[in-house]
Length: 266
Image (cartoon, rainbow, N blue to C red; front, side, top):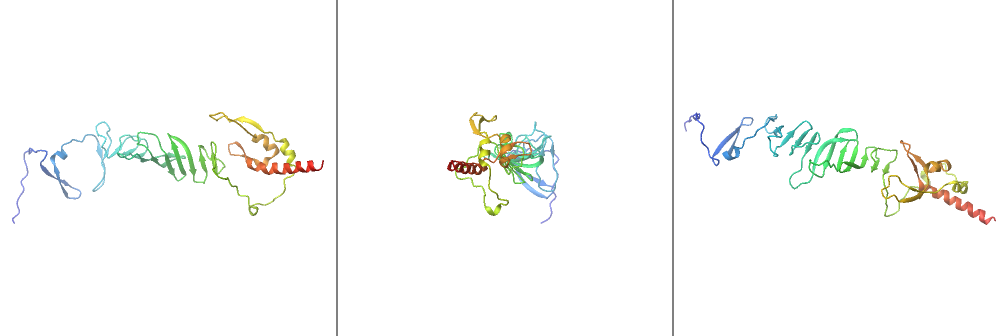
């Protein structure tokens, strides 16, 4: 078959929406068959991008580009599927899927990944993690952290000297077991003068300042206890005092034995 020359159109043809045209990709040489109606909408705004072959267009004019923008960028960051970046990078929720992720700042660094339980229009970030640890939030308030040094913080925002630091009441449905193996201890000596120490200890009623219910409790004041039984008193790096209250049972046990001996000898 002889080659036929295709003449160049000199006038703009009149096309209907149902007519077919060929669209060429100069990068790959691929031809696509499209309806005229598919190409009739006009895209306005600033469009940029780079690459050879397939790449996503980046839109940067929120006033003229519709919500169907694939990648959007403004001064805050880059967003996929939304024109409202809250962070340096984010992926908006998909219809019917109530989740997404973003890059945010966490534990002093900007390279954390946040898994969002709601769309990007909300500041709720339930889970954040990076090289420094994991965090769980509610309504923008950090509730729990698992740090890279193994410390677990519940309701606490700053690390302390404790492996587990909890703000609030701890509940256990079974026993709380503390290791007490003889093979793990050294310099073991009996407690003496226990009765005198117990008599010097001052039990008190008190109400915690940060308690919402203002419930009256009973116990000891750590600073007062330290003078008598320093072995059960702890102090963190912020000078906050605490008591290993369970260890007082050994003191009370020996005090009862001393009192029993005194009664027998009368």
